[in-house]
Amino acid sequence: MTVKKAGDHAIDRENLYGTINEPTYAGAVSFMRRKYTRDLKGVDLVVTGVPLDTATTNRPGTRFGPRSIRAASSCIAWMRPYGIAVDPFDKLAVIDYGDCFFDFGRPETIPGAIEAHASSIIDKGPGLLTLGGDHFIAWPLLKAHAKKHGKPLSLLHFDAHSDTWADEEGRVDHGTMFWHAAKDGLVDPARSVQIGLRTTNDDTLGFNIFDGPYVHENGVAKVVAETRKILGDNPVYLSFDIDCLDPSYAPGTGTPVCGGLTSHQAIAILRGLVGINLVGMDLVEVSPAYDIGEITSLAGATLAMEMINMYANRHGT
Image 1 (cartoon, helix red, strand yellow):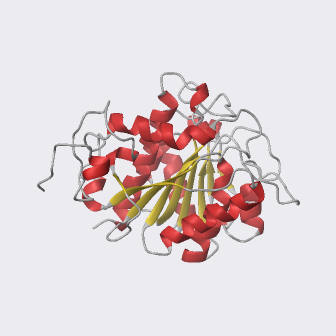
Image 2 (cartoon, helix red, strand yellow):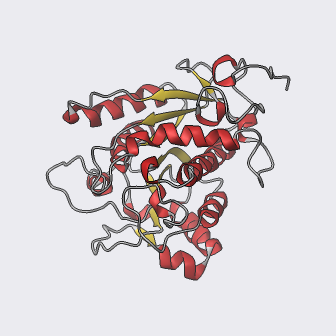
């Protein structure tokens, strides 16, 4: 494939496919140097941001997550990920759509704005990878995906927390979304998997849980095998909270919990799940104010790229 090498490819890229090497320290900050555009013609996958942090229960700052993940992604955008035989960007036409707009002064309107933003993209055909933002955004995103793909979906959830705490009042809270998703029938807990949990919530709502100690004691291969059995070929929404990783790998987050997964374990599990029927995905809870040397943002960008690889292997040309 012949590509133009000069210039800022987030702006002047002519072909949506392929990877182009350019300086990592310069240029517009788009995710993985993809073109900034809202033209969905010929697009297979859209990357967008939802810079929300008003649902956090501890340290705020995830409104800056999408920007920091994009910036860190430039460090790994110069060639295909190591260990992957075919560049996902040779299979998928991917763009950076920019961020979801909402009025922060009218918080009651934000969930609907996120859902409408997602629907306006996926209803036209492309898949969607969303960069958060706090984890609350997964609820309206799930609503949009369930409307398109049918419900219930399978939820593949990486996190230190279950996010299934009971909420009868419809709070905008990043710890209750999956309680609502299960109660509303958006996801089927029996065909869903939560990986890496290590906080106490006695009511599992019937979700299949491979908590942090299980991953460490049983290894990646067993987690992958059991997860694949549960998910089958059901449409899957993947939601990855960066605090699934141990704070030594991801300190830049609002609610860190010790004993988490290593970045290697997380990458290996995602690669082991290549081929599942992935229909939507998000990477959330990067809070760069608490980061050290941008390692959390880099982990977020790397894991998001692994999700693109998963999507490419199912939906790419």
